[in-house]
Image 1: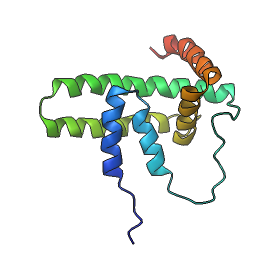
Image 2 (image 1 turned 120 degrees about the vertical axis):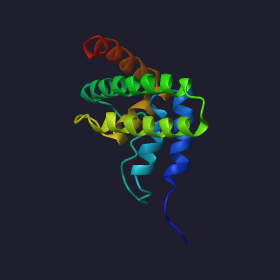
Image 3 (image 1 turned 30 degrees about the horizontal axis):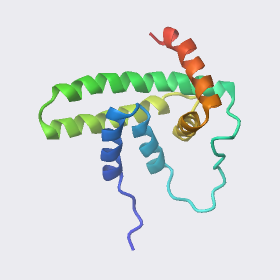
Image 4 (image 1 turned 45 degrees about the horizontal axis):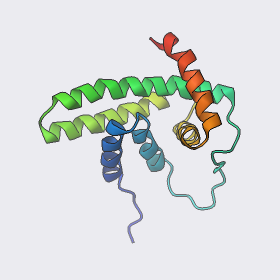
Length: 141
């Protein structure tokens, strides 16, 4: 039985969704790829787990960097008519988004994904993230 994972298919799905949904979709898939299937690993805290203000701040900084990549590549992808070139740009964008999160020493891809998921399902977390994004955005220019 082949137990490998298929990053190319996952990546393609992520890229198409990141262009439509948010800058984090590619990272969610990348996080699933980098976190190999390990049975019995304790680490699923769920969206109700307390998220520190430091992690929310780190998330906001990383999110803004990921969003810059999304904006840059979105324009390039829209301007490209060749399907192969678009796919290549989408793959490159996805990798750059992952690198943007990995470049932050204060947050991992797994933490980024967990906070994103929590913000999407918990209005209290979403409010904290939104406030931190507004506070952080002017300093990221």
